[in-house]
Image (cartoon, rainbow, N blue to C red):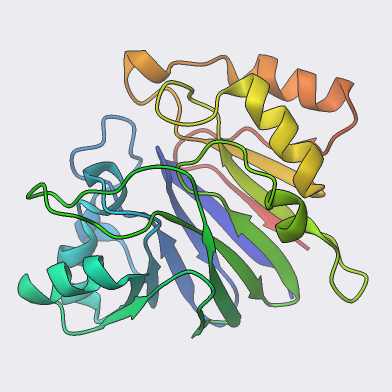
Length: 232
């Protein structure tokens, strides 16, 4: 079944599995590059990688309005509950939950995580989705780590169909390190994120894509905010 991916901006994605819509890391209203506002988003499930404002600033508002289930670290779920969200699903590394079209497993990430009030936000995470016959890895904010080889290891003969990786550098891996991540993960398609939102993380995504192609690592897809493509 086709899966359509839309980059809203920064690290916010909307994944339409055909059975429903999954929103990743909602940061829209204060994001200078976002292609839409929080009030315009329709989704069934929200996945949060970690508690920094640029990954969950609009989670409570969207969840309250839509009734979407919010899958996130235990500490984030508690904080959302204190802010009126009744649909939070607390999780931790290794856990797996049902999402529209399949399942999402919470994977490790190497980063930090603090809530908008400065309190501890739990473990940062990535997400491994098995949806509509596709395997999709959302790295979240992270550097390269050796378990990416495990995450990308083919299962039942299936490699990763898509990896979504940050390339902004400074706060996450940059273009150079992302190439090592792609080697470890072995995806068919790779999409960059977490870049060009603010000057410290400006990157030339087309130059990055050219390097990915030259090294034969994957098919790079560079989107503009609001841009989509379909995995058949």
